[in-house]
Length: 443
Image (cartoon, rainbow, N blue to C red):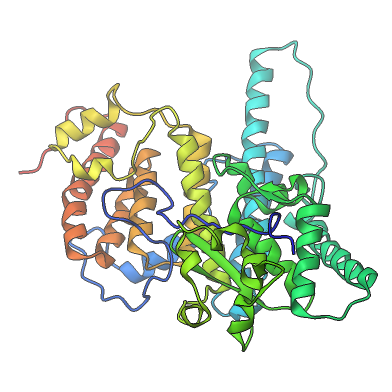
């Protein structure tokens, strides 16, 4: 068996962004959590705002311009709508395509980045009259026609189909039956030997997009798991998965778990699928048995998409805050000063300089995750803090106020003074925009 090249399915399960002492989980939130009334009169209907804010599309700094700028806007909007339809709670979870959902995520982000590049190119042309106009990209009518690393979304779905066909061809060439262990061995051979897929460092956010992984053969661990699941699905094998500590493990669904741990040729079938992580004594996965495997909570397709989105949030935030190493989203919550001090700190020279494009990409990933998990208070808190860092104070107040309706009492008490002062800052900004001077005060 191909234990050396087989899949290592470690998927980071820490909070999608650096956060304050308490660990944040973006999965398996209880939708039935009791809600408290918000303390703030400017939030009238929490339930309505949850639904509205979770579905908001916001590469929203896109201004209307040329045909190509409008094209990128329309593609981004369409990609968000297609993603929302794919993961709709009206759909059965088993019918959700992991590949399509992730490709719609990639298409929206690609359209947003291309829009910014187009705007930058136009600014350069205005500054330098002698610069030649770059050729415009081909126009597309919809997101399905947008190229991602040379292929459309349908093309990348076809690439997964071709991998499955290569596995079938390998099995035919061996002239063997369809025993599960042999099929998994053939899948490993095609993925890791023929295609050269491998897990890479997760420091590069571009390694977290499905089309990039399929085109380069290098990506993070959750993408390896998703490709494995998608290929097996095409071969009629149901692969399930679950979090175990910081690992995400996958295995073929079977009524006889003992066979997964039976050792043949020095390795169990469980190790063949998951690689060396189950043989590493430092990993909690190494302690699993056929009995304990039955006690694991199986991740749904929506859960798996959520893991991929949480990774994107974490990685885009890391890139956005690269100039201020170790910057935590929730740091301002632990050091709330007076309103005057808060205003001074926000507009002062000590404010960390964040990369706006990466910050916006993190916010977009967070919006999608909120569509999946609208009642996840810790995610909504982090989303609100990203809006705060992006100087979108009105939206930040709204998100953090909603968060307080779902958060535990002690967390709401931490948020309350910050949100009050942020609301005053928002009012002062509006006040000054009308030409008034001085600061608003509360008596």
